[in-house]
Image (cartoon, rainbow, N blue to C red; front, side, top):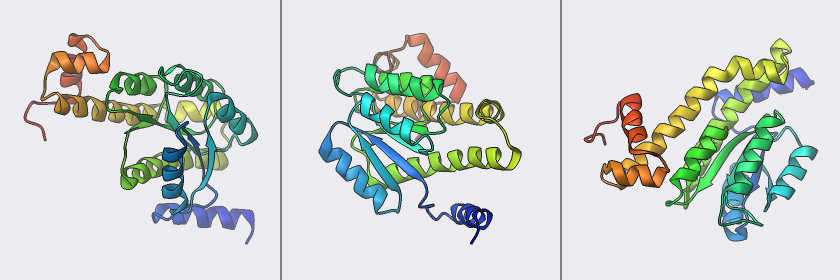
Length: 223
């Protein structure tokens, strides 16, 4: 099988929901036990997984392998594990250097403001800790699908990374807004639709919550 036939076969498999074994995932998490659990989930579904426990090791791996498809990223990393500075720095680096990888952020239940900041910086989606295996896989598979669409644009139309970004900008914006809506809905549900508490958890002003309610058509009786 030549390269073109192999690529066509991989695209067909992706459309049928099968995993492309050439897809590589980078796990960036300083908790070794949690990292092992996520690695097992992904490898059991035939993804090739690499690991990092800090910004330095993550960026080193990305330089060696810029075709990583998805980064599953914990925002709290050494040497400042109790802040989001290291994780946000990785997101900025990926965006600034035009890496193709889509970023799925890991966040604790009390870190909604961090997840919102990550989405605004360019993260593709977020996962709440602890996440079920199905949730991890669904988020990664969705990110992989977007990554593959961009790669197809590049191969079929000969576009540069900047041109690809321009062509998919609206799509990425929609994806991030969907993640934003999911986060806002989750916080409102957890606070029993308390606008003041929701604003505090998201690090926003109360007026911003009302903006999101209108923007996403969220109502108190939504399920």
